[in-house]
Length: 165
Image (cartoon, rainbow, N blue to C red; front, side, top):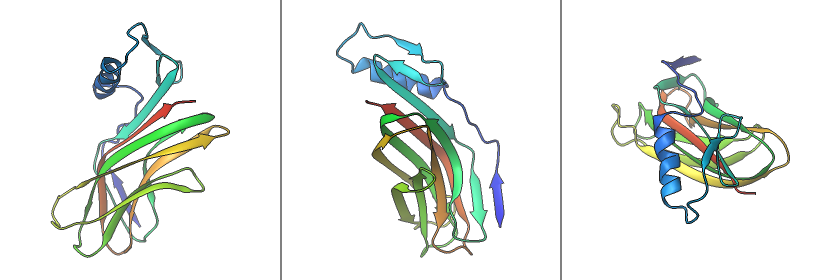
């Protein structure tokens, strides 16, 4: 099994997150709400906590059809809206390449694609899921393929979690 990850980037807040949160602020009806750090690497907007993580570098995997974790985010108890996206690649035009979010025991959401262009096509996949958690949980964005002899690639992987209750 070969796994390769170049220059993986994992952080809670960067310029892209600032724009994301700024855009959230632009659509708010109550302009008295302020953005402020919540002490856990996320952002609090009024009573809504937003946490994000990403890994933008290209990673590839081959060897079996098990899922590999690209990036993850640990969130606490409550009701959350999870939004995720990534770009996938593969080396075969008849194999399904997949990305999913996973909580350690259950698949929460899945997207799959058959690559039409074999060389660096990287179509975008995305999804969302509402989850109710009773305790701290790590949500992982994972990637894989239905044929372990094929190479699956991923880049520009993002997870955003909005605590709504």
